Length: 94
Image 1 (cartoon, rainbow, N blue to C red):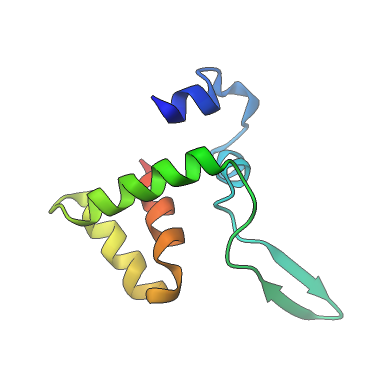
Image 2: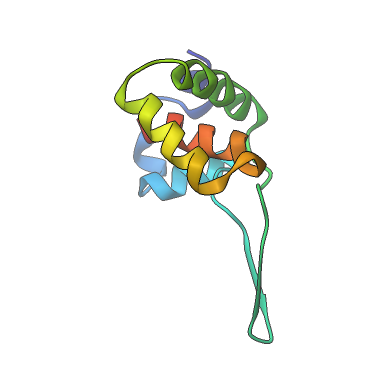
C-alpha cells in the first residue's frame, strides 16, 4: 500500500522499469571523467519506498521462493557490502 501511495497507479509517467528504479534511488550512479569511472553505492531517492523494499527483501530472503533465490544470488555477487541494494533490487524486480 505504501508503494502504491508513493508511486501512484498511473505508471505511464515512467517509460520503463529502469526509469522507475532510478526514481526510487535503486539505479547506481556512474561518474566518468577523463576515462576514469567511479560508481556510487546508492542514490538519493524516495526514502519511504526504499525502507519498504528493504523490509520486503529481508522477508523474501527468509523464504524458499524464486524471489528468495534471486536475493541470495545477488547477495553472493555483491557480497555483504550491498545487502540493502541487492535486496531492494530483488524486491523491486517483482
